[in-house]
Length: 272
Length: 268
Image (cartoon, rainbow over all chains, first blue to last red; front, side, top):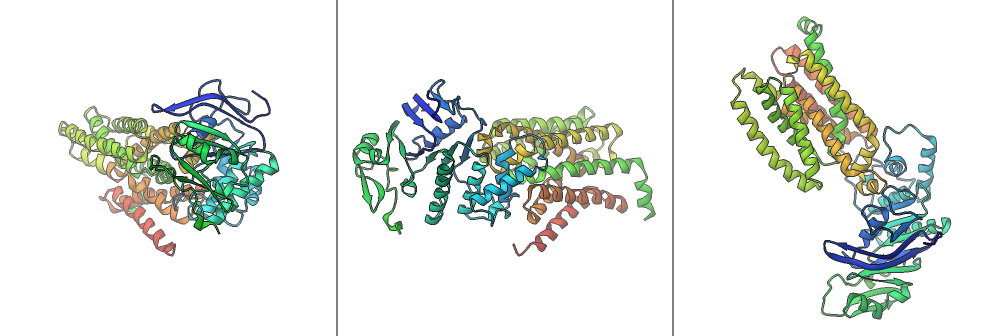
């Protein structure tokens, strides 16, 4: 396994509940790369991310993350999980949530640590959340919560950033600003980004490569290589049309609705 | 008030006040976590099982130990069984109903003082012996130490379980340990307010505190303060009143604080 790659997956097969999510998967992610993980619901996008985080076991010897087998809490990875809004009365401010990313896993009370507090301030400013970081997190908008989640994931200056549908349930403007935030961090630090999404359009101009999971099969390559009528029809095993409209990509199920989740990925009407 | 001053100089009342303060401290700390984790029903279920355990304990002459066994057993079972909130709640409902039935059965075998049964349900802190007091103090200290040590992972796992897990916190283990601490707290609280009224110390003060602050530590401190006012204040008022149980005043004060806080924060 090459030492310069941050993620190396070789001939990995994963089954869940008797279903093969992917077989003989090969993927190498190098520093500075932005890789989008696409595919219908249930294709295993989140499962792959969790496996790389060490939250469940992937076949031994076939996966290495930063030169080691994935290990839960191994560090060095910033993680933005699938968005779940916070309870309105959650007794925690944006700043507290961010700070938990630094030392929330440690036992004992946190001694007042000036360096920590400064780093938390710094990262909150970086993501432009200084204006509302002191408010209860449950009262913030989805976009604001997401910026704070990204701040939390950037605290330890990770070389790898895993984002799981970070744009879902955000409005178009927040989608743009949040994805730009992630891209800027990548460009500034040379970190690699693994970005799970069902809609590639908001990040189309940032993505280097696409990993498309569907039907237990996978395809990898640049967006132009993977997001074609031919390659996706092969993946889904049914005719699928890939249409480009004003620089946006739409995946349309042209067949007899074998896969109801192969739906229009993006509505042209939103294209402002 | 000469009566009250006299009572307060008596060891039995001083013991009771000490026990009430410890209970308030522990309940005040766990309360906000109980609400954050959506576990009010688990508290209720655990306290009903304290009734079952205490009834069993009564037959062998030690209701306090019985209550502790009952709550810890119950907490361990729901900790292992129910991972998801909904599964957990139905599992609690099933065991709560059965546990109460067993408790009533056990009580029908008991032919001692009838007041013992009401003491289990509504508390009897003034009857606490030196040995039991020591037991309560030790249990309270253990609960406090465990909470202090796991404060950050517990907070992390309660508000942000996905990231906590990825950062190496065993969310499941934290959940189980918290349930055991909860069992300790409920057992303690049941001695003061009785198994039926545990929520008045384990939920109400925290619910009021949550309306006043959104800083984790301030919420905990406020919740402890409210629980202390209710439990110590309730004991003192009970002494002054002569024959009304402390649990009555404790629930009243605790509810009064909650209503007051709601009124003050109404605009939100």
